[in-house]
Length: 265
Image 1 (tube, rainbow, N blue to C red):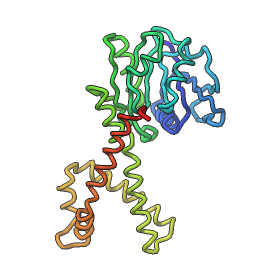
Image 2 (image 1 turned 120 degrees about the horizontal axis):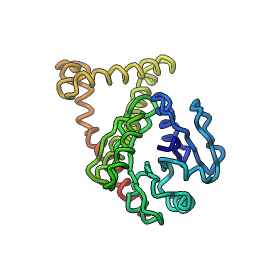
Image 3 (image 1 turned 90 degrees about the vertical axis):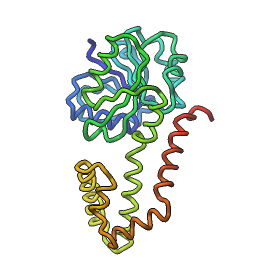
């Protein structure tokens, strides 16, 4: 097996992925490509070689990770097409771009894996969901062994499920951050200073996360927190009255619809 991977695109998810690889001590040389020199990543990962143009180093890679914007995929694949070999495996992290879309943009018949994760991959082994339409057991094993080095691997049953997970898991951290910001502003509006507010809200989110891990049944956990006739019950009643859950579900559905129609502009 070659000891190289190529990552195309140096955005936020790439940075998170590299940090996750550092934590997991992934021992592979990384060829990072982004045409924008300003996106050069100065990471502690000593095996990174940054390029602002496509080079024949791509042909030496076991895996090519597409971490680019969906609108750019045809142009990028056209540029790297000549560097690909039949042994190359492409891992696509692009929302809304199907395996068939990628295959149509390439002249060679190579293994393509569609993946989905989120920014929490930088902190721990986040889940990495994938699907690959491949009957080659060697490629399947090779791919699973690679991504399991830095992520918890889950195989999807179809690409529709990947689109669902884009809305639920890929965008998931944003929902928690958004709600955290609401609580943050509530502290500030009640007169707490910014330093204490950040300390309290961060502690609140981390502590609550541990409670959820210990008791995953929301109804049971809420009963233990909200005393009958108490302050928490009053707050929850107001949230239900304003149908906050319906608004959140609607937002997630919008994300899902976007992932299904991302190229239909």
